[in-house]
Length: 463
Picture 1 (cartoon, one colour):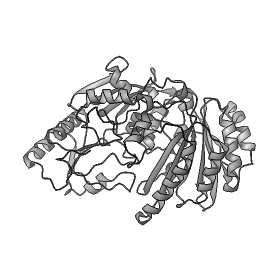
Picture 2: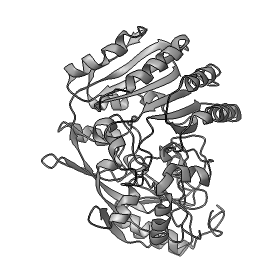
Picture 3: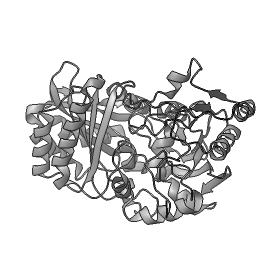
Picture 4: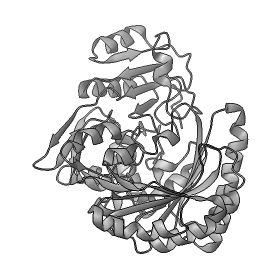
């Protein structure tokens, strides 16, 4: 719930206080009269159209602390923006203050220790370019324009998760500004309870100003996609189910129902093998033979190439609405329902994705981090995307009806980073499962007033 004093955009802040705040910043303070304000309030999902009172583009930790204190002292609703890629649009708010971290992009690699220390304004494309100079990487999503901060704090699935775990499993420490304006370091030895919460608890506990990651050797990968006609989708998905049941840790494979650029509906298997290439060629051979595919786009490539391969499917400035849930099984009945609804898709830009979750990420104890859902082997996501706002109702309705039809096949869990804006408290609770009550207790300790609430919110007890 928004603070009663922070819900209107016509509220005039004390100009003297604003000017004093601005004078103390190293970064930039934008208000609606500034020429760059309109662009600065836009996020990746064009469906989100919110107008804050102020946007502070932080240059460093001091600016973040100053902004948190200013928002708290003036009862301002606060949103925190890293990459601005979250589909729910939690990086911006109406009438409040946006802490924009997009200018904070420093990164330092320690090749000997295989670690990286990175600021929250980085995207995965920027992060990967730096680590790959040393032949290193860590799990980091599947779209290069995604910000590192939001993905990490929500858990972080990606191409390397079977071999190296989730992004949050590779987080060694984090510097965080809490609701009282304090800078804390959270790690296995410092504030370990807060460190536990940050690994999946999203933006509920403060503003992270620095992430320290474990890196791993990652050379060229065998990656790309295999395309089949939609008419064969049932057979392809059944084969995908059988194939993924014995997939080695090094192989992450997704299945997708999509429309090709020429307007032809297709089913794709998209994969990344991060082990020795000769072994990878043998492992993927059954996939290449099955069908056979009408297009085989698998080849050795640099890790940064697979990381950006799906970028064109997720451009900024379009209307986007997602519905997702985890699945314990990809049954024949579930496959039939997926194929039936894919045939009625309302936008050629929309894609249905089935992710295989296995390996290292699934061997971590579900209670070891806030990210709880490590046992379900599949994640099902409807990525509905279309350009015209006049088509919003039609596309959202199709997405919701499809998701409802899939509910009999769902497990209990959902990935917090895949939640849209209107999902409600029960879905947030579902994102954390058995870990939810511990998160509530920690929220009550570190943010009892629910100051950080423009997020998939974990309300403090009594809040």
